[in-house]
Length: 120
View 1 (cartoon, helix red, strand yellow):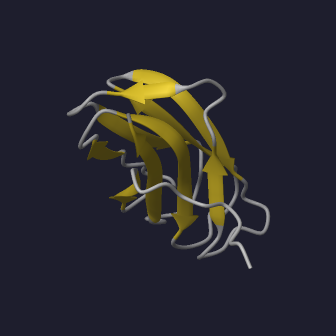
View 2: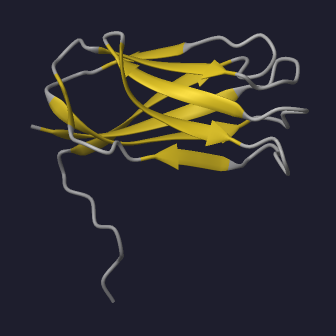
């Protein structure tokens, strides 16, 4: 039986972490290890945000390339949110990918990020 969503051998995941995507947001950063294309960015909540929705903005070398919303309603630890960039985003070795949270509430709500890239 074939598996859905086959990944090529030149596809890898980068990880990043922020200790707070809530009331006192802290950006997370990761370095592109080789020339590649950004395929998908995902975030997993480490707790519930309390009163307002949050937004995570994905930027490469300071230029925004995508964003996704983290809804407050029903938020809880372990929930996954993701975005696939609308147009191709190419990375060079040593480009900096920034994941910047904004707008959410709740004290020190952590978030783990996974960034899927494919080598050029």
